[in-house]
Amino acid sequence: MPSKYSWKLGHARSYPAEALGNILVEIGKRDGDVTPQAVVAEASRPESPIHNDPCWLGWNKDKAAETYWLSAARQLITSVEVIPAETLPPVQGWVNIPPSKTEKQAYHLIDVVASDDDKKLRFLAQVNREFHSWKNRLGTYFAMGIEVDKDLASALSIVESRLEAILKGDSGSGSTKKAA
Image (cartoon, rainbow, N blue to C red):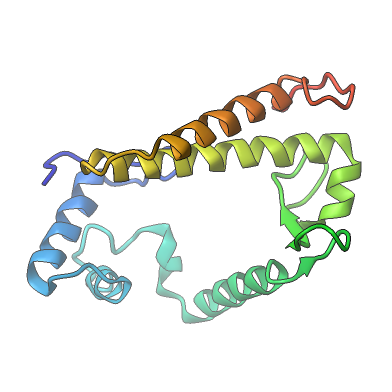
C-alpha cells in the first residue's frame, strides 16, 4: 500500500494529498471499503482536513441541490444519441468541449462540431486528453501483474498515433491547424 500521495493533474486542493490519502486508508481499514457516503460523513466533521474543500460548496444545501441538478442535466443532455446514417452505429448527440475565449461552457450538437474546424480541433484535443487518461488507467491495471493483451496494446498504439497525427494537422482533410 503506498505511503505517499499526490494530486492528479488538474485535481490539486489547498491541503496536501497525503491528508486525503490517509483519510481514505483509514476509512478502508474501518469500513472495509471506501464509499462516497463515508467520505461525505468524514468531510462533514468540521475538524476534518477535507471539511473546507470547495467541492462541499460551503455545506450550503441550496447550492448543493443546484449543483446536483446541473449534473443531472449534463447526464440528460449526453444520454441522447444521434444515428448519423443507416449503416453507422449511434453516437453521442451533444458533446461538451472546452470553450473558446468568446464562448461559454456548453454542449454542442455533434454535427456542428464536425463542421466547425475550431470546435472539431478542440474536441479532438479533449478526446486525446481523455484517451491518455484511460491509457493511464489501463497502465494501472496492467501494473497489477495482469498480462497485456497484444491486440489491445497494438490498438492503443494505433489510436494514440492517429490522434497525434490529427492534432498536428495530418487529418487528411487538408486542415493544418494545431489544437491548443
